[in-house]
Amino acid sequence: AEFIALYETTSQAIWIKNFISQLKIVDFIGRPLKVHCDNEAAVSFSNNNKMELKYFVVKERTDNQLVCIQHIGTTDMVADPLTKALAS
View (cartoon, rainbow, N blue to C red):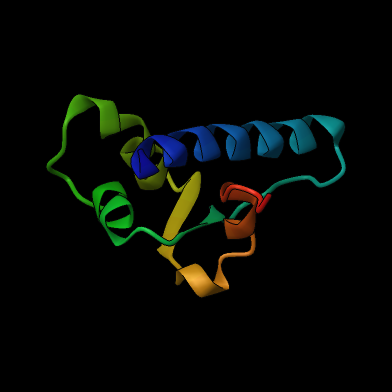
């Protein structure tokens, strides 16, 4: 599930990068977009050469330096509260 979330995140990140480029706000975005992930297995999969086909897209985006997947602790994950159910 975490790796599928990385797939969705990298898709949106690349879309935003392309959108900004098309607007001509900046000439070039040279560095890979940084994506933070609090799941070490998902980070490892994105940087590993041996994986199932469904993980290939994220790996390819990492290899092509479109994105850079880095581990971040759950306590430091800004969006983490948005993924939890609200108290009633």
